[in-house]
Length: 497
Image (cartoon, rainbow, N blue to C red; front, side):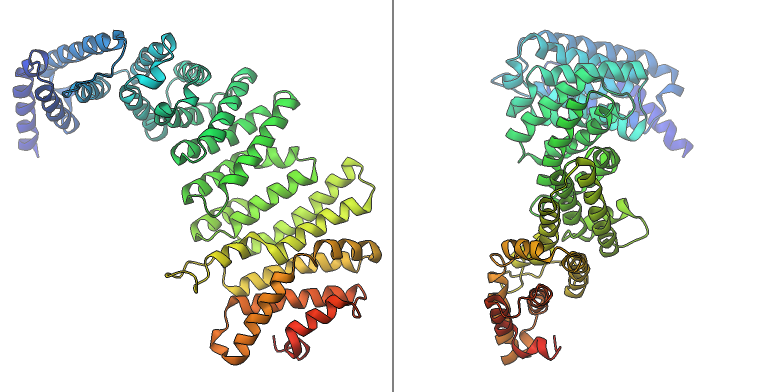
């Protein structure tokens, strides 16, 4: 090992003697290879213990800084005939960051130098070469996340520069989106340690709204945006109520969009991480039933996600010791209690409005949940490959049964005529498809028992629920009851299902 280290030191000295390859050669590819070689040697050598290399390294560093200053002064970094100059520029930046001893000052200097160019000429957001700024932001984000935070004053200065950049209009140019995603990631790190003021929050909210409307298909930008918005919700609680209300409203819309099963896995996981930061603040603010049910749908959706990792993270966030199904059971209790509390606080005395919205929620989960829609899309007869189902059919049956228990408690709890009217309005127009599916599956099952799948169980279960609801509401003589019994025949009567 000692011999190897000595060889490295000798190689480093020999290489630095050839520094003219960087300082004098005009062809960009020669200094590019030289800097690559030097970077590898510096990585595997303790340069602070070799006194002979300090002076040459300082000379090379100063040369790179002078070249950088010249580049910053240019009106435009992008050139028509680029024969390697842009690559050399990035290599020089990397060398400056690698050998500079005071990391806290080099980052703020580089960020400020490049952003000042954009501040002076907004057209550069569209036409300039953004790679140097992107490279510096990438290194800065990595330093903040994986190495160590910077001094408070430095982080605040960087934070102000980046917010100014976004406020100037950087967020509406497609060419600058990669840099915007890194800016959002850095702000997420700095804002978690240094609170934003009301003006900064207002600026960021405006930027986030623009990004969400125009670039919601850009997952690179949306991932840090979701996390940052959760943090902004938490920070904005201390500000005026109007600003906080706007934050929560936008936040629920974003979470609702990116918790859906057709979004990428990492976006759904980002939604969960964002909820971890803001959940208590959001639930503490929610004062309208619709907002509560919007939040409930997001949480139920993530607890029944098709990817085990996603639903596991969501269950772990809500209750660490329980699996997703057991967590969902307690979520039903929470939703019902919270809804009744909100209704009482809001002074809702009209029983129709109170009961109808709650019954609509439970009916939606039992008879027309998003999980059912997903299963319909992912059915093995329609796809070549089997998908990983969120739960086996028996788990889903158990959960629907628990939801039905809540619904049934309201059915037998009084005000039967009122509930009868609500159920007829909510249920019967929607269950025709369920009834048809039940008939088709049962006819296949009676012919060939091996055709049975989760549809058979669920279709019979849902139809049996309808039968039970009609019996509770004294509707045995109705046309709906006859149709229901005709669909399930003697199977339910004999309790074979």
